[in-house]
Image 1 (cartoon, one colour):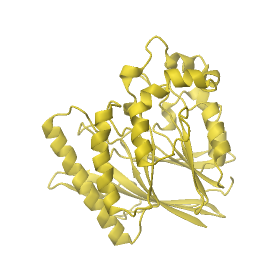
Image 2 (image 1 turned 30 degrees about the vertical axis):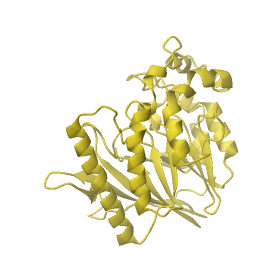
Image 3 (image 1 turned 60 degrees about the vertical axis):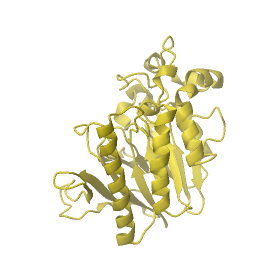
Image 4 (image 1 turned 135 degrees about the vertical axis):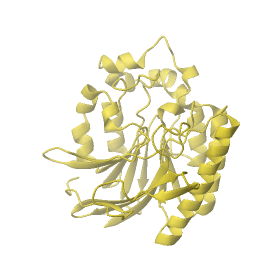
Length: 328
């Protein structure tokens, strides 16, 4: 049996020109988050093998926003073991919209079902997609060197050999253009198949920013079965809510976990939080336990275990998904 512990963050939204009061509030969230993470590690006598960040590190994909992000992750690194890996995928707020080629709509590529040919053309990707993520890529290259192996890469695969697990860091935002992205974006079959082919471990965890219901349904239908067959766990962000679903078809099942926003700039825009996840890959299938934490500011600033998220928790902060089928 292979066991992996994950600290899941998402949607931090560091802003370049936020109001000073907003920055102060964000700093309070960060301070108490570090305290809550440290207390969780001490109480449960565990350390995360990896920290995964499912997008929206920045607010508008600007280089200066990642400077504050660097300070945040430096604080996090100070309370975690030095061997901890940091794995990040881009979100729609990691897109620098000033670098979007407005005369060339990627939304239309998706809606016209012209995705495969576009993603297979490295020259078009290099011109129309990768420049939007230049500041994000520069930040990730410092956070985890060589996660993106080639300049032209827009997704990555990380094999954790000692655990027998491959992380697939997919880019659900390559076609993001504006605030009307829903159903006009997708992963694309070339990205899905290439990442699965590169994965060298028997167990696979897929990371992306958007939940599946944000992707173009026609395109998603072309490869969802292959994802469910070969990836038993999907982690995502974007919704600012720690939603837990199990996708099933007659042959396979896949757990899909969303995350609260690790910081959201509008207090009404979802929930602030983070979660620890323990994943067990065994002969009987996949088992997942989750410890979600939620920001509480009504009586004092603190993060508290979300013990009432689901019916049947009965005050237990640990969510427990029993083994799914063992198909690979």
